[in-house]
Amino acid sequence: MDGIPPDELADFARWRERVRGTNISEKTLLATDYLNHFNEIVMLIEMIPDMPDMLEECRIWQPKSYAEHFRDSGFSDKDLAIEAYGHVPSKFLRPFEDTIAQAHQVIAHTLERIGTDIDSGDPDKLRMDCQTSVAMIHRIIQIANGIIHGTAHVMEQGEIDLYLQNG
Image (cartoon, one colour):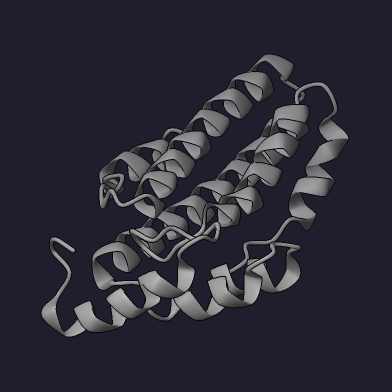
C-alpha cells in the first residue's frame, strides 16, 4: 500500500480481495502469465543461429497488449485479469507499461538486426547478436516480473538506447 495514491487505495483494496486465490498478484493486480508472450519470441530468437529460416516465424510474432494476450490465452482467470488491469495502481502500472514498451522496442530492433546478419552471411555475428538480444530481452522480462510482484524498479531508457545504438 506504500506509495499508492490515496485516491486509488479503496479501489485497490477491493480488487485485492477479488483476485485473492488466483494467479493474479494481490500486490499489484498483474499476472505473470502475460510474460509468456515474450518468452515465445525469446525461444524463437534462440533457434535462429542454427535455423536462420526461423526469422520468418519471429516476424509473424506481434506485440500484444495485456488485454489482447489474455483474450487469446487459455489462462483460467483471463477475464478477471483483463478487468483487474484497469484497476492496477499507477505506482505499478506506469513502470509496467514503460517496461513492456521497452521490450517491444528491443524485439523490433533485434529482428531488424538479425535480418541484416542473415543477409550478410556472418554466422558468428548472427549468433552473438542473438545471444546479446536474448540476454537483453530476458533482463526486461525479469524487470517486468519484479514489477508484477510489487517492485517498481524499471530499466533506464539510457541502457535500452545504448543497446539499440550498438546494433
